[in-house]
Length: 377
Image 1 (cartoon, rainbow, N blue to C red):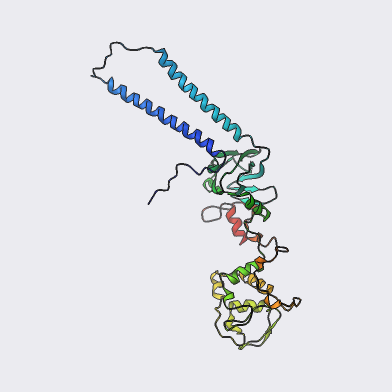
Image 2: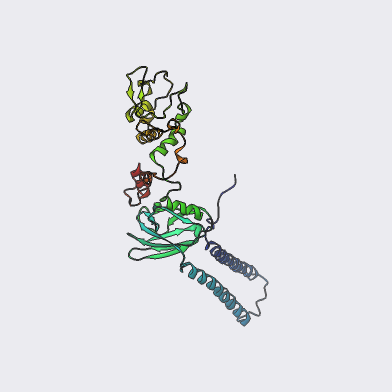
């Protein structure tokens, strides 16, 4: 089994190339001169060891050429490295004017990011590939350090003043984000990820309010359950069939049963039919449908899922809707319809609460993004 032990993080920003070139050159020069000194020590130790026959009659006390060489070469090399290091430092500390601004707040023990259009994130940072990004940062409590190894960039985040750093991602992907300054007992938990996206995907992500896909209504979520995990469509089609009755235009319609009095189908009836279908068997059908009450008890199915299924079944049509020629065939996927009128906040409950702060440690919730996610469930 081959080892997966990279010597350095991915090179994913415009700074990575010059930074790595300077770093590895300095490392190589340090190794070279270290070996040169060690070789000299070994050579002279062996040659002039006690009892050796080396000629000691004419010792050399000074050599101008050797002194100039030992002074000149390190000085020239030092100036060369200083030039490239200072040039790169100035570039890293001078954000371009066309940079996209993102605002960062560090607090024990999480990173909070806010984009200009109001999209907020906890312990994540979405950025576009090939675009200059400038971070304006401040700490809410103690000193932190915003460190992205793959971008070869880091900046201190301190209370009471703004600091800035910038970068230009060059490769799409997810990269580690760390706090590189000890900031308290949960310092090691203060991490996250940077998501570099193609510009078009990033623009769509911003437009969708921080979601990779457009927000879905309850009916669209119900459609995914209906046609996906629960596979209701295997038995309930556009028309009644031997496997199960059609659910099109169900709401408001009178339903007759073989083991119970007839009733008008409403939300309560649909819920009971999902959880305990044997209580009211539609005339002409037997006990073929599985009961989902056990899944509700086990947590595999939630009340939210049932409400979403009801919303989708209602979207198929009902007596309360104006009659149309093809009313009974309204089973096309909701995702194929126009997005106009979709509830923009339908997904808000499932997104982390960006204002949530840490509340505990150990078995308790610690990092802000975690309690935020739990809060939304």
